[in-house]
Length: 339
Image (cartoon, rainbow, N blue to C red; front, side):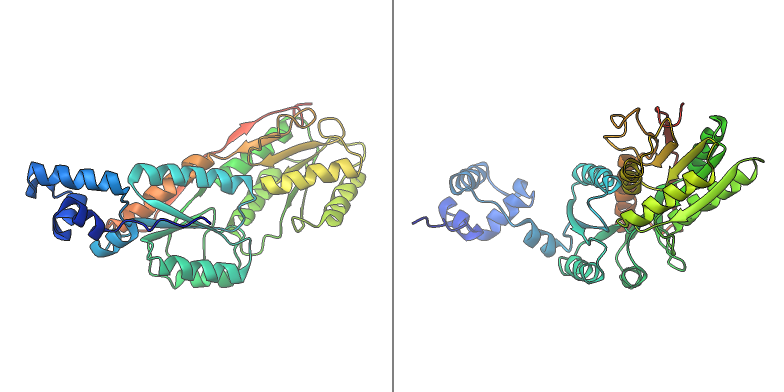
């Protein structure tokens, strides 16, 4: 039968070093100049012998600082969110903060649970990747007095720092690439826009860009991410209406691009020959899928890194006006749009 060895305490260290807890606390808190060389050596030896590991949470609370950052992600299965997380985590390591990541899976109950949980852990700030978060969850975020940065989402009436893509510029570049390639009919497909500013901004930029080019037929459609039959119908009908013309699709995000690619296979259309395909967000498999899928790559790592630095700036007392940090995307052209 295995027995768990009790974790060493500061009292155990003090006893082994033949000193008091106050001296051990001074050693741990960087006040070693107040201790004699002999005492420091005894404490160091005791810590190693006992494998003592101080509670960072307890030490942080005692100083009024936890150095914890909360991250709320609406959907961790989205490759975009994974890259954002990587940038945030790198900045946390560099700045000496610990990240607590919560995946809400777009569920309202989980959103409230994790927000309450992060507050109970006394996080010093929160980064929110809330593109899929519903309005009720966002309203609850607004009620939090914690320093906060939103990624890829603006909330009307909520004064909060935001980090995201320059959607208008990126969409214009993607759309004009298709027009320059000779595509005569273009479909912009997204998940339901609702109040998600990212989706609206990309759709508005698509409409504005195509309106400046006579002879280009422009359509837009919305479909839930996992409604395969609806996506099939949208693509099948679009292809049928513009038979004989060069057609292309712009997908508003990486997760949807995957569903569109699957749908094109189901309805018997090949990107690069039967129809063009360009998706927002770079995907690891995009260069390997058929002739390759063109993408609008977002600097997601940089965006996550920027968001974490901004929330730390607020934690440290930055009282300047609300900031919106926008990043440019990079168009990666592959066979799906270069035919």
